Length: 221
Image 1 (cartoon, rainbow, N blue to C red):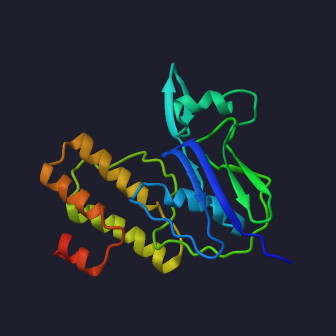
Image 2: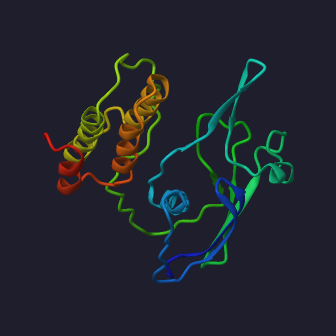
């Protein structure tokens, strides 16, 4: 029996993708792009076939006391796919398989903070997902924060502890995004000095805290 493979992925008007059309090689396809380009988002559509998926996060929006969630659809595209109507969500793309079958990518009709894209007509594809070294993104509400300004060492230590916990135990405590949000809130409210802000952004750009980077930004450790 011939093994089914991915053949083509098409997405239109969703998140950072205005129009995506990727024809996949039967043996090897490499996706490249800058941070935030959407590589992990695309890969997440494939890894669903291997029993692995991460939730996507919408942006809360409050108007007239009512909170809704923005799921990254281009405004000119919403009406075409029926988001917000009784159409049970809208199709944003299609995933084609080597067998000739295809799966429609549909958005949820009533998105919540965390949501998944539905693959209607998903086929069985044999494969293995090897995760990134980064801990998964999870949502954690920041309900309180210290009233004193953090030092650059405090910022790095809390985030580094979270990463080391994940690497050692494979579990998530608060999640790395929680510590980043906490710091951004503190800096915004407490009007942090420009020098500390620049240090934080430089450190944050490092995807992995290596010994060299850690010693550079936190010389006292």
